[in-house]
Amino acid sequence: MTADRDARLFVLLGVGALWAGALFGVVGSWQHVVPGIFDAVPFVKARPLHVSLVVAWIFMAAVGGVYYYLPRLVDAPLHAPRLVRLHLWLWVGTGLAILGSYALGRFGGREYWEFPPWLGAVVAGSWLLLVYNFFRTAFKGKGPWPAYLWMWATGIAFFLFTFLEAYTWLWQRPDDNVVRDLTVQWKAYGALTGSWNMLVYGTSMVVMERISGDRSVARSCTAFLLFALGFTNLLFGWAHHVYPVPSAPWLRILAYAISMTEWIILARIIRQWRHTMQGAIDHRGQLVHRFLYASELWVFLNLGLALLISIPAINLFSHGTHITVAHAMGSTIGINTMILFASVFHLANDARGMPAVRVADTRWGFRLLNGGLMLFWLSLIGAGLVKGWYTVMTDLPFQQIMERVVPFLASFAVWGLVLFMGITLLAWQAVRALWWTAPRSTATTRSPVIITPPPTLQS
Amino acid sequence: MERGVPEEEGGGWRAVHRRLIFFGLVVLFVVQTGLTWTSSTRVAEGRGTLDEAARRGRQVYQEFNCTACHQFYGLGGYMGPDLTNVTRAEGKGPAYAKGIILHGTKRMPALGVSAAQADDLVAYLDAWAASGTYPVRAVNLTPWGTYREMHTTDDR
Ligand code: HEM
Image 1 (cartoon, rainbow over the protein chains, first blue to last red):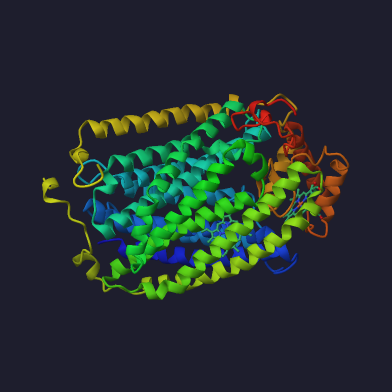
Image 2: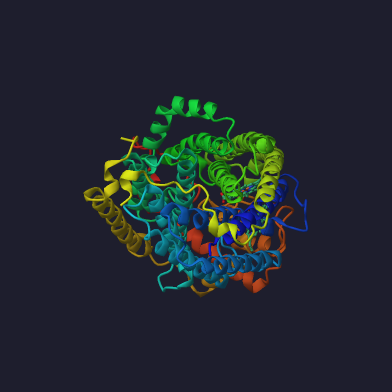
């Protein structure tokens, strides 16, 4: 028995979450421009619906991928395929309960997890099923782990830790204070995004290996150095979110120093730029490559932005503005969603054993997604620059600052619609490719595209 | 280095080194976590500590999801203003905050908060106001790319 079907369902439902989440994003963006529009879903509900659904997409697409690829990578069946189904249904059940609680206006949690806290316990519990299955299966493989297994392992383990840490406010201590509240909360969130990035970057490396057949990349020194750098940033870089919060200064200064190590990655990207561009041109006719190359462009842009706003002197102006939103969505859409679409199309075609989605099917979706995102992203940066400047340099009250920001938010909302069209087209292709019923037997007899190790390594 | 079959595939010392580095980092992280949860985020009494009313206010703030539109120290949703200092800002104050919370404005919906809940919310907001000032308006840059307020927890 394999869990391929459930893995595919994970991904399929994830695509649905992306589409619905983006729809609530459109609702929320227009509410900034036209107060009172879409009153049936006020902003106080639209925002958590948006954020929770799109985060669900990232997790479901990544986790579905792990369940699908892992047995093929270690060349051994999943340790407990039945648990995948349990994980899936627990996840779907909690997801529906969370959406229901938002719809009814029952909150009680904190930013990003605004649902009543007991639902968080179910999320953490179901994650344990993945932890168990992942580690039991991964240790079946022979030889040292390639970089992507390290990435997945850290992503999976640290998500659990940061998720629990984000709930430490439930543990009420006599010396509780708001500085600690906020600092610990953003410590957890910083590592949380770090942990899902580990899952997504690991996935990107896996997809790359599977389409190129080149096993050396994920086992090279460079891959491990980059992993170590990313991991260090996950662990110690989070305090760049809380520069203005009066916690002990060493926390914030350490984070500044650690964040600056990422210039190394930016320099490496620039050094390899020509090579990357050539690759993009050579592979422009290949579906999965296109999405992976697009993600590289967005890594470059978003890493550049992230590095700039991690410099405190600049953060003074950018913090608390839409530049943060540009950073958040630029990365979750440009990098994570792009890589996950690559993975979804690869997985769908692989599971089906035929190219169910081709480049031509995704051309318009791809263009609208990338073009829309670029202008969407620039509009947010513009909004943030205006807001940051007036906030720090003048005494204008909030409403008057916002009057100057609204034109940029209007542009943001318009390009958001274009972006939404792109997502709709791509989501439709993904659903079309994933939505089929495999004859019961094929999944076990056919073993698609397992990359056999070179003969020297087979003991 | 990146081409062909890498030499470390067979295991050996490289794999051991990797594990050492990895677990070394994890140990440092545990230390940092311990400090962040305790001494590095301790404040003087009355400088952001929560009394009973403020604790209830924190709960109410979460139940009404005020964070969807508001920030503390710049963190939160962006439809509404930052609330860090509202109860102590010039021309504002506790009564002003309570009024808006109860009745809303043209742009902020009245969310159905009761008078008792509004008092708790104001106590909670006041704990924030006592903890420091945001935004940092003085541009006191250092040669290291930081600003002076970042190097201290004193009131600005
Ligand atoms: C279809 C177009 C989209 C629109 C119009 C849109 C709009 C929005 C809006 C209005 C916000 C709230 C900003 C605020 O608090 O003022 C937001 C936040 C956010 N969105 Fe989107 N969104 C879209 C797509 C996406 C997608 C596809 C993702 C990820 C896969 C995403 C990830 C996020 C995240 C992580 C936040 C939280 C940002 C923060 O707290 O700083 N969005 N989005």
